Length: 256
Image 1: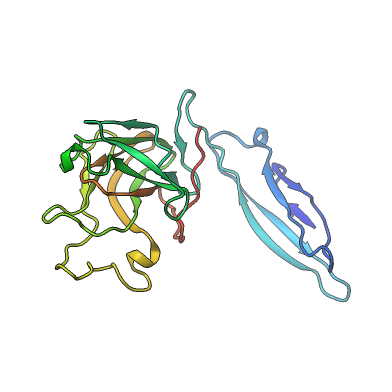
Image 2: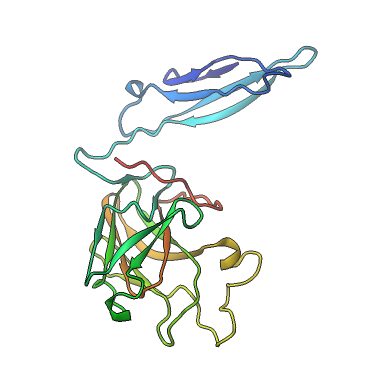
């Protein structure tokens, strides 16, 4: 059986049984939002009690929190949940082309959904762009807590041009674009630091690039700027205080 100590918790089903032919019972918890005041996040305890013939009852308590928050009317974009905002790179709010070069999706590439890369691959006559002047992807999101940095998940690739390491730039709202040269320099014929090993770039199929962007609560815009070609970006994770470590990163946030 399952029983909550708060009336706003809905349990379905509240009781069930398991057997050799029915080895599990899924229980769904939901919220009666009309009973939770807006702007509050009350917690309840749901007690799961199991009984078996010849055995003492066993009770496990689970904490269930209802975070009743809402974005302003008219907002369109991704919404913070569970301590952060997670966005697949291909799901930009806007994609701006410069000089016939644009960001294009590579379907089913990478660890989750896809990747995005500037296209044509060697467009702009193989030249690069200064941060804030090239093709860009913009992502609208709303945070209920202050923004405390972002992690851009990038596909590993070796630097291809002498004196021009792979790079892109990150900008939050009207701040100064922050350029990241995410593959360390190395001597010819030698892999860069972090490339090899059981927890290296290749083994993980990802390079985690941290951006020191900060902001208060509310509506925001994160922009990815092309600097060098051949960069492939898979995912953006914006930290609002409680992004927990995981191999694939948090699932994509709700979009409204």
